[in-house]
Picture 1: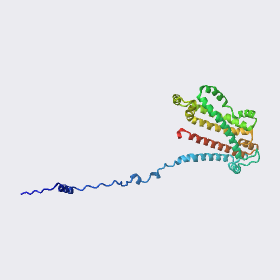
Picture 2 (picture 1 turned 60 degrees about the vertical axis):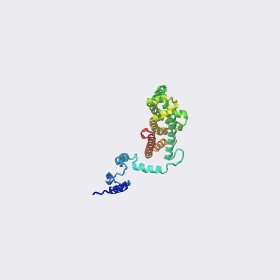
Picture 3 (picture 1 turned 90 degrees about the vertical axis):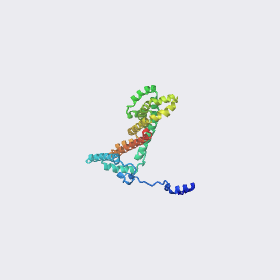
Picture 4 (picture 1 turned 90 degrees about the horizontal axis):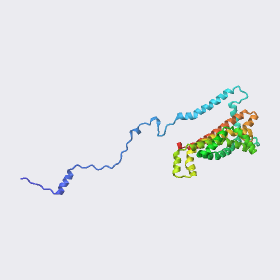
Length: 310
C-alpha cells in the first residue's frame, strides 16, 4: 500500500529555496588599484615628464658667440704685443672701467660723460626716426594701394635712396641754420626709404582673396586699411622699421662728427683730435652694443606680432 504525502504549495516553495545553492551576494564595485607595469620601471634617462635639456643648443647659443669674442680679443692682443701706438685689450679694458665709473659727469657743454653723449644721440635718433615712421609708413600704404601713386613716386625713391647720408647734411644746415635739426633731418631722410619700400611691398603682396572679400562686403577704404591691410602688412612693416633704425644709428654717428655738440659721434671725433685712440676703441664697442640692443628690441617686437608665434 503506497501512502502519498501531499505538501502545500508554500512548503514546496520553501524546500526548493533551501535546496537551491545560495547565490553570491553582489560585490560593491570598489576598484582595486592596479599599478601599471610602466610605472614600476625606472624612468628612462631620468625623464620626469619635462623635455630634456638641449645642451647642444645652449652651447651653440652661448659658447659659440663667446668663442668668437675670445678669438677677436686674442687676435687683437697678438697684433698689439709689440705695438706702441695702438692700445692692447688690457689697457682698453682698464680705461673703460674709468670711463664707466662716472658716465654722467658734466664739465661744460663740450665736456660731458659718455652716458650723456649716448643719450643725446639716442634722442636725435628717436626724433628723426619717429618723423620718418610717421611719414614713411602711411606713404608706403598709399603707394602699395594705388597704382597711379606707385608709378609717380617709385622713380623718385629709386633716384634718392642711393644718395649718401652725408650728402643730405649740408642741405639741412642750409635750411635749418643749426647743427641739431640738421642731424635730425639727415636721420629722417635716410631712414624713411626702408619703411616706404617694405610697407609698399607688403601691401602689394596681400592675397587678392582678401580684397575680393572686402569688395563683396562693401567695406570702406578705412576699414580695408585697418582690418585687412594692416594685419597682413605688419611683418613687412616691422622689417622696414628694423632696417631704418639701423640706418639711423649709423647716420647719427657720422652726422655728429661733422656738426659737433654733444653726441657719441662728436665724442669719437673729439677723442681723435686729442689722439686718444683708447677712447675711440671704447666708443666703437659702445656704438656696436647700442646698435645690437636696438636690433634685439625690434626683433622681439617683430616676433610678438608675427603670425608664426601667435
